Amino acid sequence: MNDYEILLMLDPEASEERHKEILTRMRETIEKSGGTWTGHEPWGRRKLAYEIDKKSDGVYHLITFIAGTEALDEVTRVLKISEGVMRHMATRRPKGAGKPMSAPPVVPDGEPVSVGADVEDE
Image (cartoon, rainbow, N blue to C red):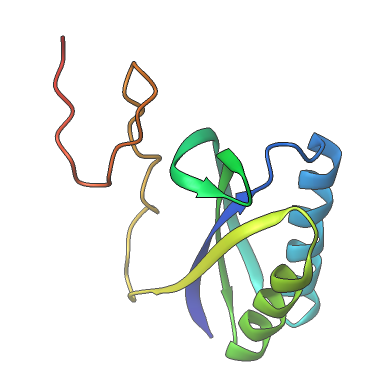
């Protein structure tokens, strides 16, 4: 079993109920395969650097869990075919990794910021 995290970008036009359905299905899939759901951190609605499917915003969620590779494969398969999921990225967390990364900063004028970029205070 390995530590994983998945960064989800959900369709901002989908209902809050649909977002909850996607997250619930992920949790059920992980736990059904013997994994452990360790956390969910909603990052909220963010402006995209470029449009995806004519949408300029996305709703982000960071999910952390412990599972085998079979569970990860099943979760990613389900996310690929789920209506309302714009993008997702699964990564394996190193052993002994601390808390997952916090949400990136939002620049006051709404411009997207790359992770690791310096944000100047005005």
